[in-house]
Image (cartoon, rainbow, N blue to C red; front, side, top):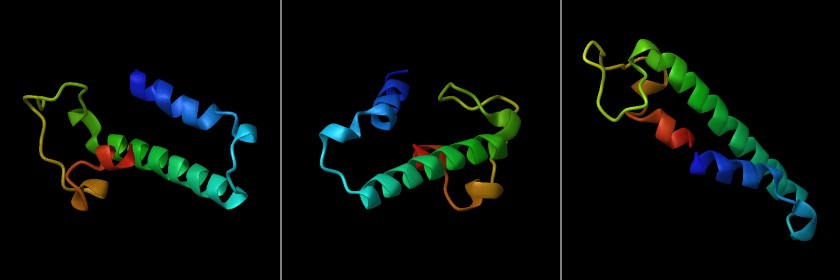
Length: 79
């Protein structure tokens, strides 16, 4: 939950009081959107094996499809 609050602060922070170029703003929003999309795709790829706990499900299987064929933990990369 702390991570969600920090992400929301980044998104809704008042950029009028900082010296950020439009290109930097566009790049940051692009990375934020790509990270969100990567997180959603990796959650969908994980399917029924998705759990909030660090221990894998008893009937879960190692996923090597989708984003998981490129990275072992694509959700962490997305965040």
